[in-house]
Image 1 (cartoon, rainbow, N blue to C red):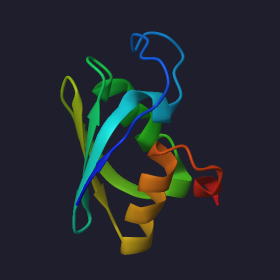
Image 2 (cartoon, rainbow, N blue to C red):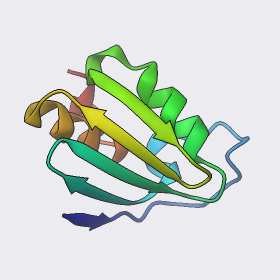
Image 3 (cartoon, rainbow, N blue to C red):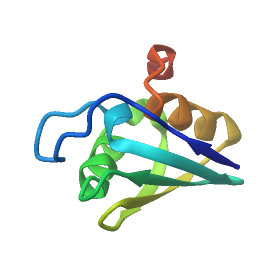
Image 4 (cartoon, helix red, strand yellow):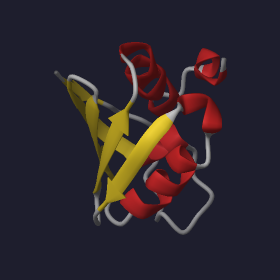
Amino acid sequence: MTTPHTSGSRASPGHALSVDELVIRTEQARLTLVLHTSAGGARYLARRLDSAPHLEVMGCIAGYDVVLVVRRSWDGARRVLRYVHGEADADR
């Protein structure tokens, strides 16, 4: 499943961006998510996902503009997708 993601302005990853401002497109293959970011944003996004314990991410691999995210459960995968799309209830 591929989900295009549009958000507001695209600043450089060095600025304090919200997660939904970094993500351009998401793809899901079972419990694996592929998150496409603005140029250079993948490492920053991976750190944000890894440091969010409520998301229960097993691990992230970041390139320049793509993050591969491995999740433990279907609910967890949906939680990460809600988080990157800026939905407030993803923290719960």
